[in-house]
Amino acid sequence: MAVALMGWFAVVCGAVAGVDGGLVSGLGKSGHFRVTAHSQLTPIPINQMHSWILQVESAAGEPISDAAIEVDGGMPDHDHGLPTAPRVTKNLNEGRYLVEGIRFHMNGSWEISVTVVTAEQRDVVVLNLEL
Ligand SMILES: [Cu+2]
Image (cartoon, rainbow, N blue to C red; front, side, top):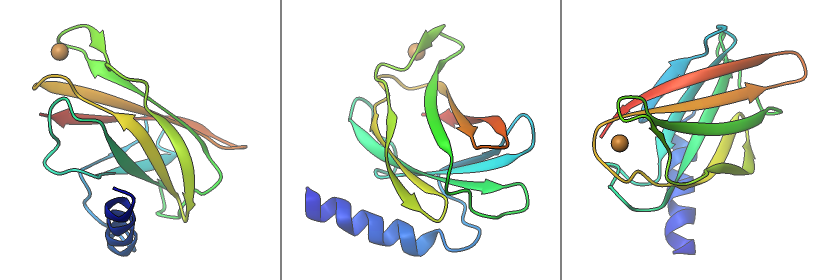
């Protein structure tokens, strides 16, 4: 497992140099930050715990490495939240953050909101995910 995770890091780290599609990407409501999510597992399985790497950039594309990040979400159509409480467990530098504890328990339309706070700015990026 540890070896597999390390391998995934290596792939993602190589892939995110420059603009990369990732799983899903979005610009914050205030226009300050862009977040691109990369999933450890693709396609995303139902009911399986896994990790994401969030790549956080300024609107101009500069990596944001000193942010506090909170992840929340749910299914607006079903009026419920996430079945778990994912959190950032590691700052991987160069604007990349490891989020552990993500699990989706059903297919459908999910919304993941990523709150990005730096010393100067705060923004909420909503990522829409169809599973
Ligand atoms: Cu639901």
